[in-house]
Structure formats: C-alpha cells, structure tokens
Image 1 (spheres, rainbow, N blue to C red):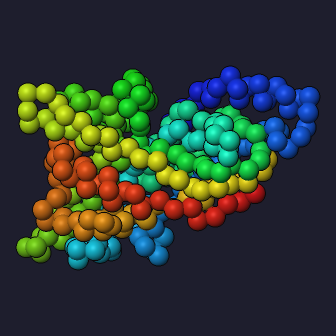
Image 2: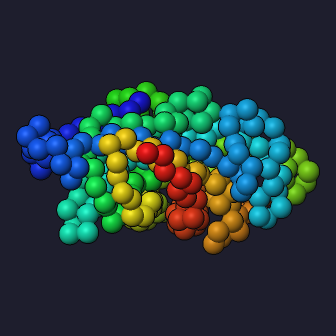
Image 3: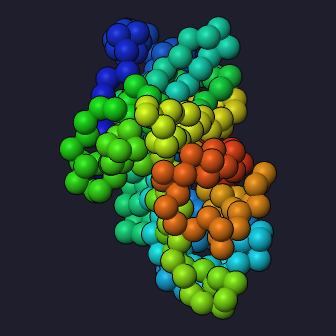
Length: 255
C-alpha cells in the first residue's frame, strides 16, 4: 500500500553531494514512522476489536471493528524555510495489521529541522488523483459527494439509548454540502506537527493515535445522534475535523 515518488531535484542534489562530502549536514537519513493506537491510556491492537470494551466521553459503551486511515506528505522543514517533502501516502490498517510501520523509500539529509509534520488524509491536489491500489481497497468517495478518497474509516458497535447494540460508521472525508444545485466543499485534511527534530542517520518516530479523542475534544460526540450516514453530513465532517486536531501525538523518537 505504500506509494512514494521522488521529492524534489534539490533532494537529489543533496544525495549527490553526500558522495563527495560526508558532512552530517548532507549525509542521508532513513526515516520510519511507527503508528501505535490507544484509548486514552489503554493500548489498542486488533486483538481489542469486536468487543464492547470502550466508553466514550458521552457515556456510550462501544467496540471497534475497523480502523483504517491515510497519512501523506511527510515534510521536514529547516529554520531557514528549506523543506523536504516525501510525496506519497500510507494507508494504516489496524484491523488487518498492515502498514503500522512506514519507511519511505527516499532519505533526506540529517540535521536539525525546526518542524516535522505529515498530512492526515490528502490535500486537494492529491485527493483527486486516481490511485488504483486505493480504489481496490474501497477507499474512494462516491462522485455524488465530490469523489476523491476517504481520510479515515472507523467502525464498530455501541449500546444505544434503548440498550440495543447498534452499528456506527465514523468515516471522514473532505466536507461537502450537496443539498444545493452545486457542491460546496470545506477542507478537512489537517497537518500533524511533530515539532523540532534533530534527525540522525536512522530515526524512528513513534506516533500514537488516541482514538477516544475523535469522540470528545472539543466536541462531545453523541453516537445516538451521529452514528451513520456521516459522509454526506457537512456539519458532522466539520466536527470530526475539529476533534481530529488532538488525536495524534509523538510518543518518542528512536535513533
């Protein structure tokens, strides 16, 4: 599922120069992003799926049966504004244990970067390309909702206010209002900032997704009201975007 393309001509010049000069400022570093998952302080793996064992901020007990999400454009930015962007994407699939660790094909120069970040989902330029591998994963969005691709699929069951076990599908896409004569869009991809990093020749970023945050911060999520048909729900997509801002955190760095 990993797909990467060349980052820039500047990058290749840096790689060429490293053959002539082994200075640490240009010597290439290999980067790995490792994705872990939790419900607050409780780690989550696929072994926790399909059982009602979590409680959200609104008080609903729930399970997780599927969790997949897309990350793209890992970017390293220096103090002087120089950036290195690893174009491409990775579909993290906790359900099937796929792509939990992601090592881009290309390296970048070692050194200090004032900011390292990646995109949750696709920006608008990438979202409307045609990715056959994502199509085969049923990851695309219907044309009636503007096309493009999902950013996340989080599904499971919850105990509703009638004590009935009910399914939910918390799917995030680019927000779209299709109630009028023309589609109206709102960007809902966002950048996850990992902060300042001193990059060595081999660096692993241990990143955590706290799944409970999707349901509580800043919007307390009522699954009785918002559980299905969320993709065409413009307002719900904006709420998801707002809650997503606190979902990811950098746990540690291994060098």
